[in-house]
Amino acid sequence: MVTVTPFGQTPAGAKAHLFELSSGGTIVRVSDFGATLVGVVVPDAGGTRADVVLGFDTLEGYAGSNPACYGCTIGPVANRTDRGEVPVGGEIWHLEPNEGPNNLHTDLDRGLHKRLWSAAVNENACRVTFTCTLAHGELGLPGERVFTAAYELSDAGALTLTYRCETARPTFANMTNHAYFNLAGHNAGSVADHVVRVHAARYLPVREDSVSAGEIADVSGTPFDLREEAPLAAGINAHDPLIERAHDFDHCLCVNGYAEGAAPRPALEAWDPASGRTMEVRITAPGAHLYTGNWLGDAHAKDGVSYGAHAGFAFEPEFYPDCAHHPAWPQPTCTPDHPYEAAIVYRFGTK
Image 1 (cartoon, rainbow, N blue to C red):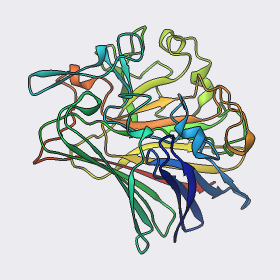
Image 2: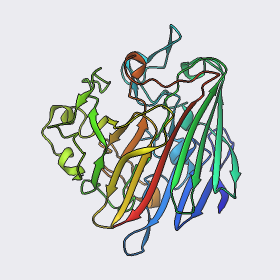
Image 3: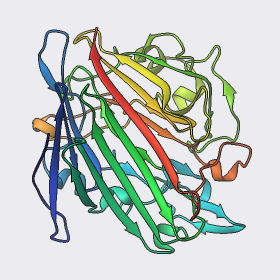
């Protein structure tokens, strides 16, 4: 079932909407503003339901500064890009510097997460598909582009998010979703006790400015070795130069088994011992950025709650950050004959 309700007005005066998908005991709320994941309501081991996605009650929170990018669709280029330079077809294109000389998430004021997307509802499939267009050169990249973000909720309560970019000429696209999860409930405080497992034998070290250092390293003997279940606190509290450099987890993990065009594969399992809620994430991208909300600090967020550091964790599937500068790494393809596509599958349960 899909229901649609008003969700306020954008700063430009356009009407935004909230779409509620309900199936299999799971409720998912998404907005056409930023193709944003606003909430996911699921039961705990005792049957008590709670929203496990951090965010805001009203559009104003998302349309305002929202530096944490709660729930947003990020693009065309997710994560950090060295000097904001993106080579495409032998030509250098420029993203606006917004972290010193570098770029983070394309444009924090005008990126895809700050735009009102058109929406199409498929009631039978319990799916809503959002569409947003960019002109050639807009947001610093070539091609007239059409982006879609489809949220579909299965009968079993699995949420599949599918991204696509079609372009009139070769361009660069590397999208992700920036939802923060707290399986105890969005208002439950720190996620340090959450137990996680990530299917990743390698990770990307970062420079002092948090841009990819240009190497792919083995996780063995580091806090990034999450191949066996471990509480996030073990990494958050680790005395490791890269953890301290990023103020806890803020790193891309190279998820095992990437193959272009393959079906979503296991990437992460998370479990909150207090509530018994679990989340499994499957992805098609080469990696995923694990961020433990190190800089969160939002007063009067959803339900009037204030979020602080570690109030939620983000797991952002993506091609490796700054991959455009490292041709040996997997590269996203986006041409007229080969649209960019990516999928994320979230499964919630209890144990």
